[in-house]
Image 1: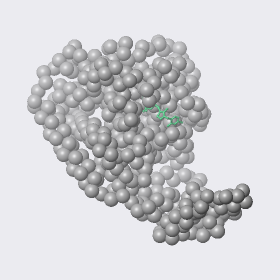
Image 2: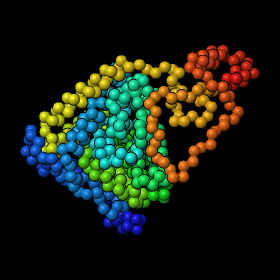
Image 3: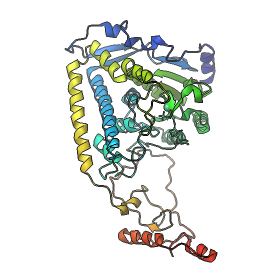
Length: 467
Ligand SMILES: Cc1ncc(C[n+]2csc(CCOP(=O)(O)OP(=O)(O)O)c2C)c(N)n1
Ligand SMILES: [Mg+2]
C-alpha cells in the first residue's frame, strides 16, 4: 500500500482551498446543470445520478471515490428528514437555552448537518462512532430519539442519560459520545478500532474531531498507532473553519487537514454536500478494512457561535455567515438537487418541515414538564458492572452502585481472546456502603464539619474517608 501511496502522492498537485475553489460549489450557481433544470412541483423520478466530480481532493490515495452517486427517492427523503430534524432540534435547543431550561454547555451543530447525515447513511448498523462535544446531530443519526436528546439537554430524567450527561455527554449503542475534552475522543476511537480489528468482523470506527483539535499531539499519536496496526479507523476532521473564535489559518500551519497524517492517505470532501459525504464514507468504509486508516477532511461551516455564550460575530463578519447560509447551505443544496432530479417536490419538503416542526415542538413541551432525577441517583449507572465495593464520591463516601436507567445493551464487540477482569479488591479504603437517604445524611454530616482551628484538628477532620 505504501509504495503505491508514495507514487500517488508524488503525482498530487497542491490543491486550492474552498473560498478560492469556485468550481467546487458550482452547483449553487445558475450554471449548475442541476439547478438550470426546470424545478417542478411534481416528482417523477425514482432514481437519479448526481455528479460529484468537484467535491473531492486527495493525497496518498491511488484513486478517488466514484465521481457519481446513484440516489433514489427513499434515500433523498430520509436524508432530507434527518437534516430538517437536526436543524429544528438545534433551533429548539437554542430557544430552550435562552429560556434557561437548558443549562451549562451547549454547542449547536447547525450548518454541519450534511456531514453527519451523509456519513451515517453509508455506515452499516454494526459500525461504531465517537465524536466531540458538538454532538447533537450525531446523537440523532446514531439513534437517540429527539425527545431523549431534548430531555438530556434540559437535565430531565427523560433524557438518554437521565439528565446526568447534558449536551456534551450523550451515548447509545455503538456511539461513544459526546466528549468535552478537545481531541480526547480520537485515541478512544482508535481503541474501539483495535477492538474491532481483534473481533475481525469487518466493522469500522469513525473518530471525529475539529480543525482546532487537529493540531493536538494526541491526534498524531492516534494516527501513528492506527496506521502501524492497520486499524479500521476513519479519522474525520470536521473543519468548520473555526476553533472557538480562532480562524483555522491563525491556528494551523497547514490548513490542508486531510494531508497532515503522513503516511496516512487523506481525502478532502465538500462537507456541505451530503451526497459527497455519503460517497466518501462508503469509499472509506471499504478502504480501511483492507488498508488501515484514512483521514477525511469534511469542509463545513457552523452558523452559530462556538457555544451559547458566543454570539459568533466578533471574529467573523455577518456577511461571511450570510453568504454561507444563502449560497452553501447543505439542506438547500440537497433540496435543490433532489427537486431538479425529480426525486422530491417543494410541497413534499414543506410537509416534512411542518411535521418535523410539530414533532420537535411537542417533544420540547413534554420535556419541560418532565422531572429531574433524585440526588441519590447521581451514583447510579456509573458503570456497566461495578467491580469495586460501591463507588466513592469526591469526599470519600462509598455509595451503593445501582442501575436505574435503561440498561445499555452490552456492546456487540466480542473479542476472540476476551477474558473478564479479575474482581478488583480495593485496599486501604473503607468498604462501608451507604444507601439512599443514609448517603445524603452522610454528605450533610461531612459538609457540616466546622472549620478546623488547630493544625492537628485540621489533619484529623479533613481525613477524606468516613470511618
Ligand atoms: C484539552 C482542551 N483544551 C481546550 C478546551 C477548550 N475548548 C473547547 S472547544 C475548543 C475549540 C475546538 O475547536 P474545534 O476542534 O475546531 O471544534 P469545533 O468547536 O469547531 O467543533 C477549545 C479550545 C477543551 N475543552 N479541551
Ligand atoms: Mg472547528
